[in-house]
Every structure is written in C-alpha cells, then in structure tokens.
Image (cartoon, rainbow, N blue to C red):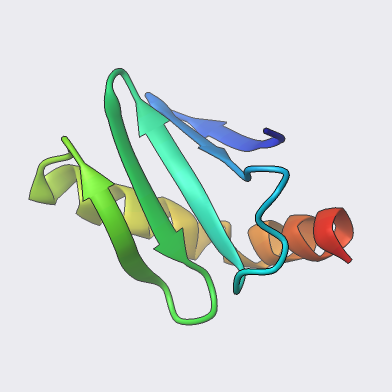
Length: 77
C-alpha cells in the first residue's frame, strides 16, 4: 500500500493490486475510510467520514491531483 500523501489527519494511498481499475485514491483517518476517483474527482465510497470531512478531502485531492495522477501512472504502468 504505497502512501502518496499525508496531510492533516489524512493518509492518501493506493492498494498495490488495483491497477486494473480507473485511477483512484484511498483515504483513511482513524477508523474512517473513503475512495475517490481521480479522473473526475468524485466519491466512490465512504465509511465513517462526515460530509465536511469529505469536502476537506476533496479539496486536498484537487490541490494535489496532478501529483496523485503522476504517482498512479508511475506505480501501475
């Protein structure tokens, strides 16, 4: 599970075996978890995060989108 970014209380990472799926990022904090698609930033799934946290996470992804896409491509291609 390569960690791509740690910001505030969030850890952004990939699962090593998911290279066949479209580009996405997983996020965890405490016992909360979410998955966001990167092509058009959108929530794929979430467990435990409140709406304001998902909004925060989405903004972090937006600010770091180019780097996350680059990391995805380097890791899976």
